[in-house]
Length: 335
Length: 254
Image (cartoon, rainbow over all chains, first blue to last red; front, top):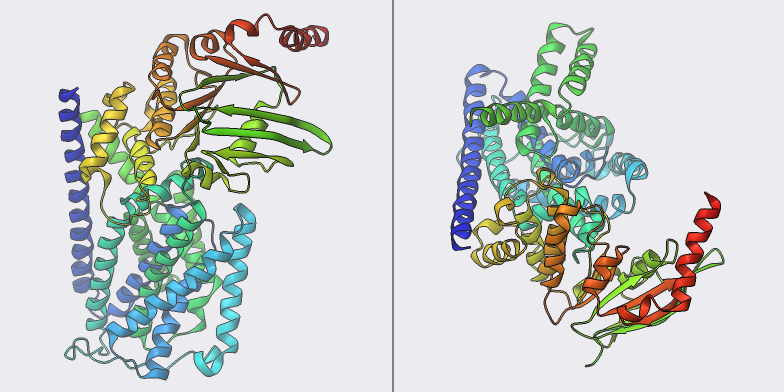
């Protein structure tokens, strides 16, 4: 018995150190890609910052769809709310500190997350999907109508963030915004890694598979999922705020159905239920879209469609999921 | 000893068809009761009424003297009424250790904790290891559930239920679908259940019923037709009628 326990302690410790290893690899990979991106596209840092903002949206979507199994096509509501909250704080209330704007974005996203969560989680399956679509249209229309606050279809302008820490200006080349974005992404990534392997993360995985079983353990799936929606809103809000800070304008497209659907496509492309998958999906989709749309402005959407069909047919677990599965099988064979 | 679990005059009908008709029973800590009955007797409905998954038309369910009829399924679990399922409902991508840890954390109100990992919580891990070792699952604790045998999955169901430290445990056919070679392990687990736990087992396997139960309740057409010792159940005329009647009908239909 003691022997078994000791053995188990060793296995538990090995597992823990493996997880920490994966965390460090993840941080290293994000930093490495960020540095490579900086040197490969020095003139297009705005695109890279936009990729980071959307990556935050896709990570946020992964929390509710990948980890909890909630079907939604309206997740940009959380991203857009964060963007508008940060933008309105700056344009109407003079809160121009980038850190406070980010905080406003987090709050805006979290509140939108709470509203969407309470409504969407009343249904399951297709009705849930329809509710999410209705919500994104309502959010969009609300932002369109409240034009004195949001600028309506002209977009919200007049956002001029202060220099970061009073020193680094958000200049035309977008260096500060990019580095700020990388910092935000790394912080969110680390926090989410902690979250997804916490007891709460485990509970969410359980709910995704069998909510009735979780109820039979005395836990409430609904309250857990609403909490996750609020967290997801905060993460999307960070992305929205980053977008508002870096582009200094917030448009209705940030609250659109198209943006929501694209985020879902990126998540499926990378692989659901994995933070690495969300990041990889966003990066590949947005770079591919940027490259193909420049190379062939007439047929680029067709090529994006073909890429997606290929991934769904030949790598149904997404790019990351398939690659990770392949590597795991190879390692297993070797041992 | 005072009752830990009381069911009083429970009734339930579906579109005019009475499925549970005036069922009452009482259990004290340490009771080992088997609930049997022919197919369609209303056993599953009874379990769902007791656990709070269905609302009764009338009647009361009491736990430790508290009336819980209006309390939902989650509230009843938190008050100590725990069930296992006829077909295992486990999380295929999780390990046995994760299952049991989640139940232990939930029992302590810590399943919503957003940081930390149970692997680094010594008190949780000690309890997980001890419980899984007791059920012979120690070697598999870090394997995925999808990789372990069905009999072991059934043991894990029992481990999860025990991790919640219930006062009343409802076991829904704990040995169903388990190969003959593994039933011994499950019977051992049932024999090792805590002495002060009140256990109500729904079971078809009469050998298991006779070995496990000190009291047998027979349900037929939604009504209790027998409540007494295992020795008397086979002699009871109403029970024979209920079982033979269903056999006769089955033969006739065939």
